[in-house]
Length: 178
Image 1 (cartoon, rainbow, N blue to C red):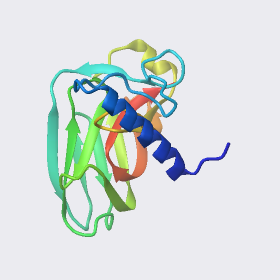
Image 2: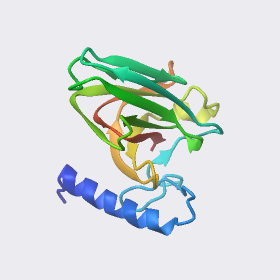
Image 3: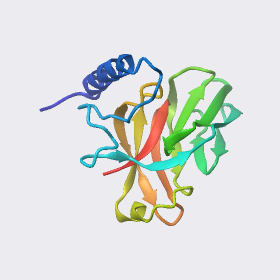
Image 4: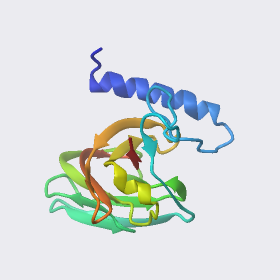
């Protein structure tokens, strides 16, 4: 079965909308994949559980020459000519049960770059020993519903305890395994 990326995203966003309306009490609920499978389930990918109880954020103005935003071991590298004009970016690590970040540009929920940027998420705060058994990946999620939208892949550096991938847009991301 062949699906274009846009068709896949439409299907995932449709499921995200259904999920969001089913959580009217405002609770995030489990992360879910495009087929509705919970990321906390034992089959398929699972979100990396490493709870953090406080939300932290860092904002930086990035211009035409590019720049870097770092927070709690997470790193965003924006290359030269990736933005058309100086833009304020905010990297947020929300209070969450998962290794999760949310990145916004000038307060927008989504931002498209002219050139790919590098996104590195850190799982250094995780103390579980089973993390080293398989490669970790970065997943693009809907920041509101926590629905899984796309497997972004990534390079898992076990020594540094980070996963790095490239992206051409900003939104919410989580580290997953499986």
